Length: 159
Image 1 (tube, rainbow, N blue to C red):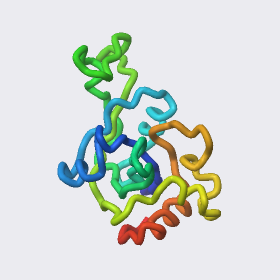
Image 2: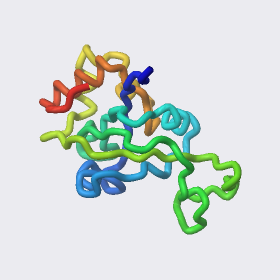
Image 3: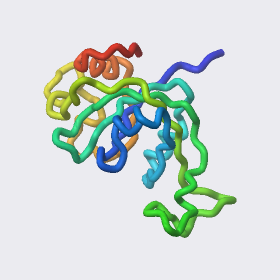
């Protein structure tokens, strides 16, 4: 029995990794996540799940496009590299702490959908990214919220 598609929001600072960079590369490992709850969400991701690609610490911060999961969770190699900003001396190859998923490009929105627009939309009430103090870089998104963001963006993507 096929699993039901899930929906996610993943945040990246555009000067670190942007929707434009993903479009150019086609797919990329989403590495460097160092929060256990965000890591656990990534472990739930399955190939074919859809992702709202969110630019954080940007002007404006907001949803910039859509990605898809093309590779499920596996150990993040940056945790083992002492030269990496994401190195974790306590993580071992036998018992890795951190994972990454492979994301693939789907669509870049014509305009970023700003966080303020998301917060002001009554149909997005309860969406985790709109909550005060929501700092997680990876969060689940309800299908209705995902579809609403696609509509706000004038997206061609279908949930």
